[in-house]
Image (cartoon, rainbow, N blue to C red):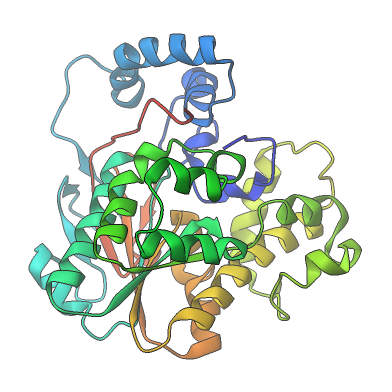
Length: 344
């Protein structure tokens, strides 16, 4: 995803793209990682970066040639957690996968976060979807990666009417989401094989950028009609989170934080509305960036205000990320598996 678009609030979902951000990348290496992960480079440069990255990334993340077993230190928890641990923050203890699925039994909406380029996070998402299907639950999958305006084309995919390459073209994947489709391919193929309902959660991708520059009031009526009626900009903790990121980075032509924050809230409330409108009598597994589900003040609480459906959040994280027990209902420690390819 192009870091200069807003898409700028998309930084909030995946601070792997921010120098010195959530992955704890040393600032001397951050320019390299940002260029690599965002794809802000020519195809030739990306090839060079990928080749260098295959050699260098382990050293950027560990800072040493000798590697100790990776562990995650969580704010508020004395003992670090090893890779593979699923930690139930309400029960204050580690659980296995089967127990996780049992504890999700009462949730109507299950949010599974991601750093967009982390392969391990997408594997978790697929594992949870499969477990839900195999347990006999009727589920549908909501994805941040598609705007709700593409719903008829997502229906074609769920019905098995189009092949994979045609689906990417008809949903204009690389004009909208812009991350390597291979990161999501297994999930999408499984959805098609099982004829699961696929829901586009996002608002049209051109709208947040317009809001961040000109504000909500200056949107064309046709654009405003594609947003929910209620856009809540009053949540103090969410505002502080977004403002921290805004102050740490210079966004050209986005000098008004109120507009920047309104764009983020339009994004959160837009996806919350899509969940509320499409839940029906099934369970929805929501796939979205960690920043949208962190501490529930992005999408989850806003969706709950609309439909009162019980929900749970699963927050996948890698060692050396900054994490708090408040960030999710379940924290799942994964490998630091960034894909070196972000664009095709």
